[in-house]
Image 1: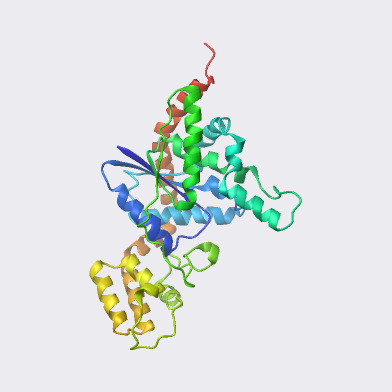
Image 2: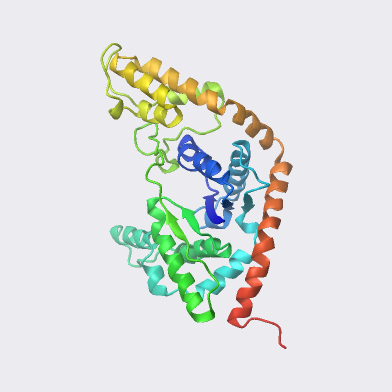
Length: 334
């Protein structure tokens, strides 16, 4: 079987872009009988840039409830919280001792922070940079190598970290024998990237998102805020230049997309186009929204699901870490 691993950082509220670009295709992939899927809530990663305990705790609950409400089979897929696998930080140290500082110096995240300091005229280029940020690629490597993932779906901005993972894993294998599989980076160029309310990529960084679980009235209100041009009803409109159409297409069937494209040519009013977009999205999310709201009211169900997932994951992680420690010479004295 192919082992596929996906991590979700617990610092925000899921939005439509997350759903279309990552969650929905990942859940569909997990239904493949030839795939062993690992999905984890990366709460240790969240600490790198977020020092708001309540935000991390609330995000963890919301994201876990989201995946469960949208149909992830947690009896088949491995669904767990990163911090519930103590073997991961322990493996992180073993890998840290294999990670070259020069390799870490080349990390995009670290270099970007150094560049920002220099642009602001700081005397110390490392001002404000924690070892968490600097060592982030090693923790990511531990997440992946812990379960010998064959494939890791990531955005283009994360491909460097997969290269670092292979570098660190290969160096460990060179010194201590072949223990780690070298993971393959999976970047799906076909995954939809939704525009936000202002037309830029939907991102919490831009404050332009449409939260996934808004009640119907608030969902409609948000959709009505999507930026459009000034063309009047009756004037033909170009779907390739429309944020409303881009979002519509991500949720619609081919037939619905073709019909909307024709409606644009016929001069559909922006208000009507947005109303049809609202109805399309609301229909898809209505039942999952009810499940989500029910789960949020039952945090003990979410907690038990995550702990059960961690127990299942540790059935592999615990003996594998023992094997790795034995390989490096950390073992009982005979």
